[in-house]
Image (cartoon, rainbow over all chains, first blue to last red; front, side, top):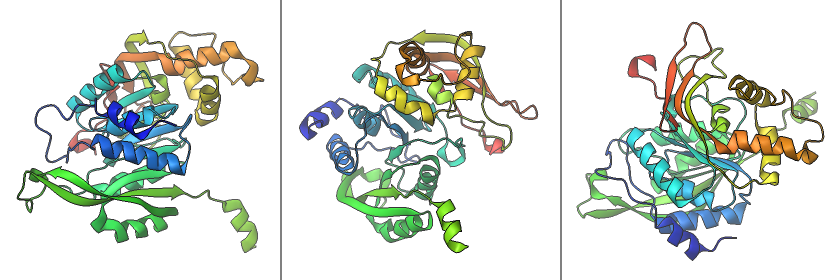
Length: 219
Length: 123
């Protein structure tokens, strides 16, 4: 298993957004120390070896880079911003020879075929600029994955997300609370250059459906 | 864009007959990657193999099998072909087209990345 320090120093090579991040897309990089800790938390839950993974709203590719260090089979990284996608493809190719691909898309209207990925890891927009976009990302992740979904959300939405998880037959477990650094332009309430937002790193566990069995019980 | 990704993409604009997308390749490259037998074997049941096979054969690899060979675990030649097709072949430039005759929406592949974003009036 890769060591946290080793992973963190690898992830420190991921450059931040070039130029001005797009405010409307809530572009902010997951700090390498967080990404590294997040990967360790996932490895405590399950082995990532040979899994087919997806990263929704990959941005700089920080989480994709983290997954690539864990012997996954492949990562599909989805990004809306065309320029960011091209930069991320290039930097990750220089950093790591693992198997990953970038797809430019809008997760909101992206369609997925019936065969699914094994795991989704994402740091979606928090929904500060566009209400409910975090929920849209989550529902798409539930739909596209026959496995666990790991995601970062504002702690203030915890109760709502727990309900959403149960409605979608997922288990809900907060693996860690973080103070997430956000540039102050992401919130009108923040006076300092960098403000902190309380976020949860959440596991939305996959529950194998046993429809056939249930029918027999009902009869 | 690897063909593994092609296996996971459908037309975002329409709801029927929108999979698999037709693929047109202007430029492709081979980038070598370490062969991992276990990873390939685990991947096979997760693929739409028929779609992959049709695509690969349409693109010119006529000997590629239509079905997963029996005794696939011992069939090293096939596994290596599959590895080359799934992991080492990159479509750098080309386009994807919706197979639905009433749609035929094109999605460009530029610098190795497909663009699946719809315009506002298509959503």
